[in-house]
Image 1: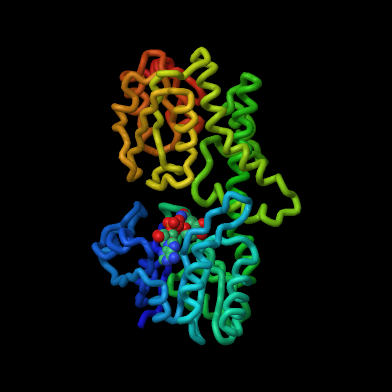
Image 2: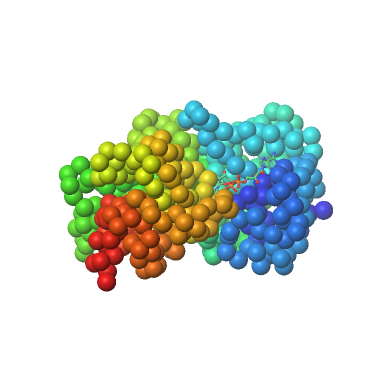
Length: 413
Ligand SMILES: NC(=O)c1ccc[n+]([C@@H]2O[C@H](COP(=O)([O-])OP(=O)(O)OC[C@H]3O[C@@H](n4cnc5c(N)ncnc54)[C@H](O)[C@@H]3O)[C@@H](O)[C@H]2O)c1
């Protein structure tokens, strides 16, 4: 018997399973991916998440490939992926498939928690599905709740015990049961309705996605007007109590890129968030076009170094990263692309190999490694003398989206 099963040992599920085990619960982890199960069995973290290597080595975590085994525990937490379909619509395929596996083995008293990010109404749908298929009364026979994951990658152990834990139970009984389970992790519990929990989660991400669209749009406007976006941002924010515009960059990643679509499914203002998405999606092309203009119109057989594949600073997660779109666009210009990332699992060239003799160097991810003073000096020394730097993050400190490496390095010495 287990206290809790976690189905989907991905970037959300595995750290959560470890945190439950660390809190003294008997935990079963379930995943259909044999490689993932083997990694956990051999106490090897399959991705980077600070502190979890030590936890995995120390705690007991049984694993299984069968979702039906989850019925051995009182509580079942689903941490499955929820991408979007190619339509503006949540893809609940994994959730539906696991629910169908669980249907025959669910029994009275079970608590089912959706930890995945879902479109508004999904938790009520799951409760209704169990009622329809098995005749359970939710909140009395079985308990269903949404307890969204709100932690950022790389911050799991720092935040799991402190970030308010939002619990949206279907009926009072479900909220109480879910709260009792998550209380073990130590964070304050905030009870609400399922749909409010769903909206709070996706709008947390929509807020960030929209926040970053403004500086990205400003960056593109600045190019049109011959202005420097970093100067304008400084003018907006400096000693101004109502400032606070963020910095530009390649904004994407598995959550920010898709979660807005869960709201757009049924939006009363269709298009507003699609517009936000279009701003981010157009940044790679804006950067490539900017380089082409500065290099006389063609990138054919020009060596281009792309620094960073991860979607976010200092993570090894490259899912939904715009670096890949940038690389595809560069390849379509017949450029010779060399990629370096110090963290992702995908094999890449070394920093030196990527920048040697480069005509252009893009900082596609603002990894802290690229912020070190040595990074700019190494590009200036190894790349072509007139190498163009493209750094929408200002990681290298040039304070220009497009700049020439030798000029910037000379200013620094
Ligand atoms: N990654 C993040 O930082 C983050 C943060 C907050 C919320 N979320 C949300 O959490 C959810 C999970 O995200 P993730 O990044 O952990 O996804 P993931 O793709 O890393 O993990 C999902 C796991 O589920 C497994 N799986 C799929 N179908 C299965 C099945 N039928 N049976 C058993 N296992 C199955 C997969 O093999 C995979 O290991 C998503 O809804 C996501 O939007 C993610």
